[in-house]
Length: 413
Image (cartoon, rainbow, N blue to C red; front, side):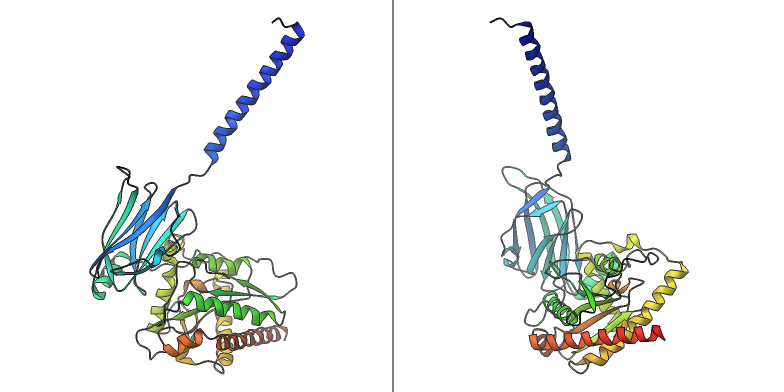
């Protein structure tokens, strides 16, 4: 077959265009492959073996990955910190346990990190942990062996390994944020714990994360009725939120008031009733200090190391603003106690203070309300009561109303 000069030029142009197109497609495919994020390992199975003295926890992975493992008290648990991992486990996986492990839970958190939290029946120490490479058709594995120990031995080891208490988030001088366009006061409601961090667990297995979320939602509805507030929830579902992010929500929304909601446990059933806490560098008593340390350790569940961000703050403006916020916090705490004591019981020391990380936004008046003790049968029962929840939330809403009405009146004089 013979081609004319014109047809040869047309064919050459077409071939040149085809070559250019192929070049672009190859480069696009290469760029896409390079830009695609790594898939990471997938945990496809988990199992528990052993007895009440020694227990082994094993996970199967599609490929090896970096990890760390450590223990935490109050409640007793083992935390496995994983990098770039996803989970493909059946919904009931965490309930298939034995030996020292009473339950386990897992989830993906921020920055490509994931966690497995093993709840244990008592104090345990990690005997050994190691990773097994995939071989002979078997998947890669992470193995963690734990052994029963005494509380005294646990706490001695724990103090040695965790001599630095988690410090507050990096302090920065107050920056004016955008207020609500309608001029409404901004109230941030912070139900504690959530997701793979259940918080305290009651006698009838009531989880703190569930009852405080239910109360937070009830308080939101009670505050909505007046239409005077913009209400922000740090979480409105069963999800994990780090302590740092809870503080950030308050500051990013230029909150006028921050209310953290919790429910504690103690040994025995004699302690009951609510307590309202404000921020203080020095705890009002030993019980307040112990509670603050326990609540602050919730940040470790998410693998957050506040210590790396701690700085000495010398800014005079910062100091003055934080001092004023503490005064307003105490003022609201007194208002809340006055309203709530008519509808619910309080402890012998209803107003206390300690160094809670979640209360450390320097320019936001903040309180932490312990609604009651899940270790008390009567408190646990009322924390699960819709009627009690609604009347207590309504009382809290009245305290918010009185706090802001008095504050506005004082400023206009």
